[in-house]
Image (cartoon, rainbow, N blue to C red; front, side, top):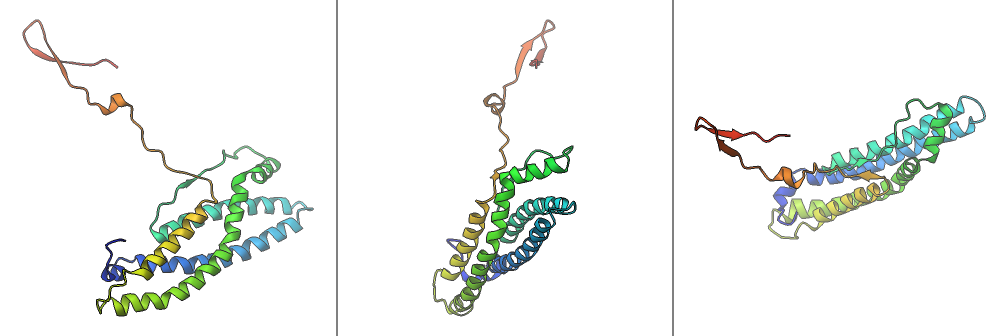
Length: 211
């Protein structure tokens, strides 16, 4: 963004993505709060009967799935990279009690829950910032830019810095792994030179390396 002009800011779509991500963050924060607060309240309230345990298991699994989906969604909106989340071993073959114990004992479950719980206060801040930055963006890009008054796109840089900062800070709550680069041994990186030999008939034959 160092050499970005006001025309770039109007046409590359990054400003719209950054500003839209703040509104989406607020909307999702309210949605998560309402859904998971109600879901956990009902499942814990019914935990003394049979139906409460499967419902609690569903809420725990939904918490992990929603956190992973949210982080990938925000990365897509911001056109940013989203590291792959670490996943627990497969639960195939486990019974109800084993799965419930696995979810309750997994750090991924609790970190996902904290991630979703923080979406609401972060969403409130995001909405306030989106409202406050909008007049500054309009003045700088739509008025000062065409008048060739160079403000170095302070509002655009500030908007992008805040949105990316929030996205990365939220991502720290989720255990993730970066995709491994396909490593090659040193011998594989060095292309072997072809070897030739002279056979009994005087013809030059290419030597075939074994293995």
